[in-house]
Image 1 (tube, protein in one colour):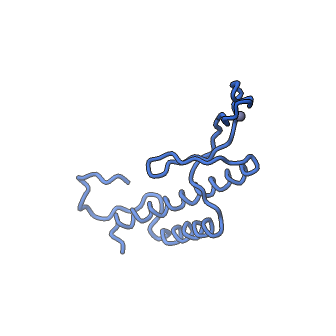
Image 2 (tube, helix red, strand yellow):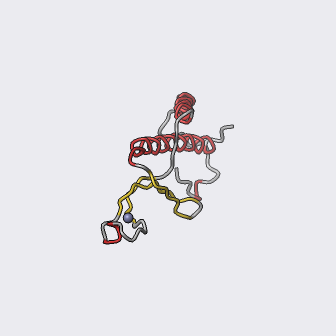
Image 3 (cartoon, helix red, strand yellow):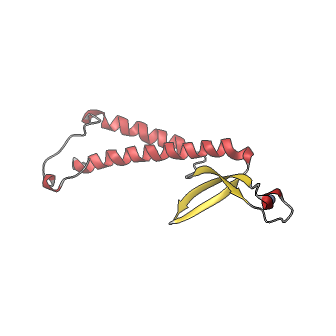
Length: 124
Ligand SMILES: [Zn+2]
């Protein structure tokens, strides 16, 4: 919810998504899913991309323009691009860990939204 300056100081605004009486249960379910998701699962922030490169060996096919194609995990980290080569055998697993991270991030965002509503409603 966007807080418009003119609305500051006004009285409680009920959450439009979750009826007040059910908010506790919805939040418990989200928190439970988040703890299941984070317990024991690998969570990886980033995305997979393919890159072409030359290996540097003078006799290699890549020196003649036929570059090596490799899979890389990339993410921005503290303003810099972080990247790592990922062997083909790891692709499916890494893809799964990326999806799990996104799911956990989504659940965390939902908890944050609920907390925004709590602040809005002056809950303690
Ligand atoms: Zn090469």
